Image (cartoon, rainbow, N blue to C red; front, side, top):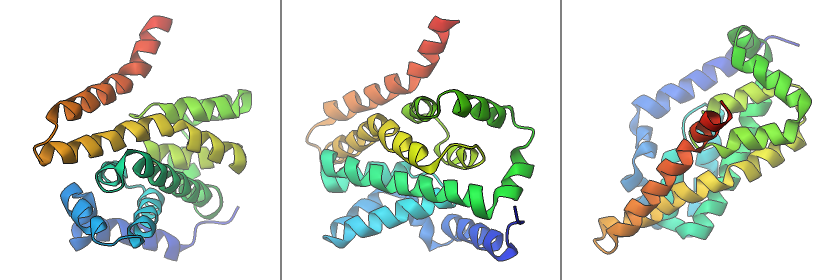
Length: 214
C-alpha cells in the first residue's frame, strides 16, 4: 500500500481549517442553514447532500445539517436526504481510509483497542455489526467511517449497513428540526420537547442494554 500523498493530507487539513475558522463556519448555524436552504428551491437538495458528503469526508459532524434538513424539508424528505447524504459521506470517508490514507490511518490507530474489536466483529458478522454500531446515535459517526475502512469489510455490506442503521437516529434528529422550527414560530413547543425526550431515550438504549447484559 502506498503512502498517502502529501497534497491529499494538506487538502483535507485545509478543508477542516476553512470550515472551522472562515465564513464557512456558518454551516454549523441551524438558523442560517434553514433560512438559506429555504431560498434555494430544488437546488437546496443538491447543496444539502453535497455539504453532507463534504463534512463526513473531512470528519466534521453533520448533526446540524440533519436538524436543518428537518426544518427545511420536513420529516419524510428531510430524513431521506439526510440518510442519502450521510451514507454517501460515510462511503467517501471509508474509501479515503481504505485506499488513499490507509497507511496513515493504520499508524494512527494501530494500537487502538476499538480497531481490534472492529476487526474481530467484522470477521464474525459484518452486516450485523455495522447495523449495531450505526443504530446508536451517540456513536462517533465520522471516526467509525474511517475505522471501518481499515477493516476487511466489503463496501456493499458497509454501505447497506450504514444506510439502514442510521435511519432511526436520523428520523429523530430530523423530527427535532421539524418541531424546533415550529417551536421557534411559537406554534407547538410540546412536540419539540417530546422529540428531544425520544432522542435522549434513544441515545441511552446502548447503555441500558449493556447494563442488562452485565
